[in-house]
Image (cartoon, rainbow, N blue to C red; front, side, top):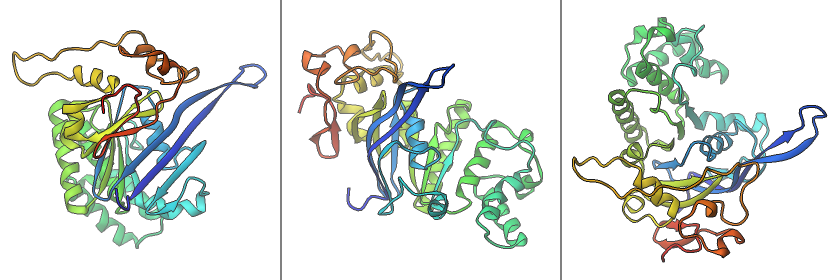
Length: 323
């Protein structure tokens, strides 16, 4: 990808495990263990995998909501992985997030107008009158009346609250928005409305998205490319159509086999993985997936598979994936 908006290389996020008595470090949780990603301008990259695989931690590390342990994060060509708060301030305007839970992500003690005006106040943008006008325009953009600014979050439905969350993310006109499972807490009919809203905003504003999700049915409608994570590592990256019709990694194949078939009467061959997901505090040697992999070989338990290109834009981290 030429001149990506975001380029992540070798990203690591490790959390210490401490003794409850002496507070000594007794282990490490490798939540993110060497992730490489690229996102182009105006592109949607979906980051998918089982719960606990490190998707959300990866997104928060990219936004520097949590500090990475290692690796590189280049945004707009500038390295930001080690920036302090003052140097990060300009980048806060260019990268935003839509949280998963629209009931917990909005301050119940603030009016919607106060919530949407807060980014302008923090970054000292405009006068009070300017901010009121911008808030009204944001509400219209996401399909809510300007009068909603005077109400509180509890007065809205879940779908309306998520529209408010999207409006807050748009306030500072970012270039990249990370959606942390932005529709998983909503009813199915409302999910479609929110997805269509985000796609329309992307087309109008040239936004880039990282859509974090475990729902491959949703991903199939929104993503340009898909990155599949397992236990802190990206195991396969491919264009959406390629991934859904020609997945090469055994884990990706198992995930796809669990997607409900939309055609009545047609059934998909289900691949059931054996065993449980290992703990990120004690990940397996070699390929993290090998204890559950149906085609694992002795080599898989010893050597970490490096991503290799098997087709244009399609990379797989598996020793045994077909070329």
